[in-house]
Image 1 (cartoon, helix red, strand yellow):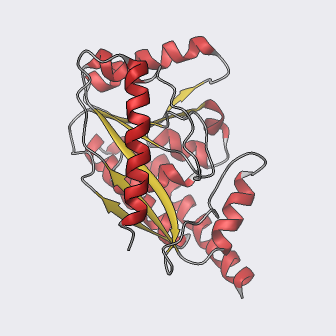
Image 2 (image 1 turned 30 degrees about the vertical axis):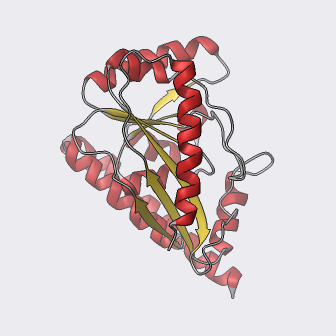
Length: 252
């Protein structure tokens, strides 16, 4: 029964993905930024629902039309969907995502900026584009760990992308993600995407898992004025760690 349920979810998810792809190809050029954001949020919530994941938002999501840089821990490819469901933001993601079948088109349609992590100098290019986007009023999001972790530990934060918030003079909003079993409230590692995991293996574990709760806990925005990015990265690391623990304590 679990396998049959997983296959049914997979087919339904594919249909939702194709519907989103069709929306991007045929409607996005006709929509303004606000309506695009609403479409992305609605699609993300629907996709998570089909995958058996309910989203719980704790704290206050970033307000509309207020530029800021959102930072969060990184567990799974699902993190982007979860944060989009809570509030649409433009993500900074590894360049490889752009070439993923279907997902790449969806990510690009949602306004993703891409970075070549293997090239150090590419970070400077991306920071320049991030700064410009923030000055133009966009909300951006990064995963400062630079890669996924299994949720048990929080990897050190890279500080370089924080420079965009400092240069643009916009606040940084820390947030934390957790996936838990919806029935028991215990941490679930089914969505993990680390080490030898593939996108397909992570997806299949998620489809086979009992219903999940994705918790997003937002902290308070922090002023970027006169910040040292390296010291700030260490401070934000502690903030996200605390938010992650609070998310578990307040899970329903």
